[in-house]
Image (tube, rainbow, N blue to C red; front, side, top):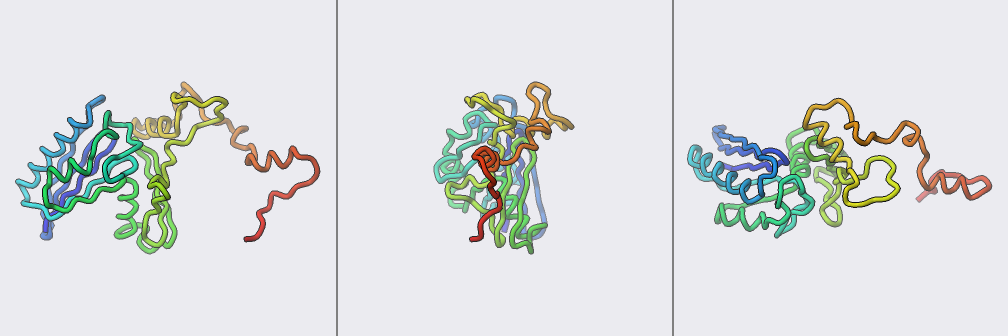
Length: 225
């Protein structure tokens, strides 16, 4: 039985067809700067057909993608222009017909692979950390990635860097800083807007600071549950 895996990223697409006998073929596509989502998907389908022609028909297709995966869309996937506007599931089903297609967030898919075959295989509670164009984590409990109420558990890349007095749509996120640094191999933060200083990192939690300002002596120790 042959299977096809497609991994969409922020700057590349990786494809691999593998069969029971160990035969495998793979391709990598580079996503051009500003390349629209439809063009990326069309090139991916062309590459898929080439691989299937070389190895043979596939029984299933597994797809990983940045963003929050829903039945009819993928949200919070800004690295490829128009990716969140695609009905990715419908396009994939139309391309592969009756073949079973499974779609998952890329970091959660990687965490699941580690649970089944890798470093998290025997770990009851663990954490998968992804550092690339996108920054995210996937908590793992009893061999399964934690999805969260809306499928967005672990999307830490959208956290705000530093102390922000007024937020707007242009406020830099962790992913904009760290993702760019990781992708370029940089060893330090961009100089346009420095990270939190050692002093700001040393500030106690907000709740503790508020208690200190209330007068009298207050304990910050957690109560028993």
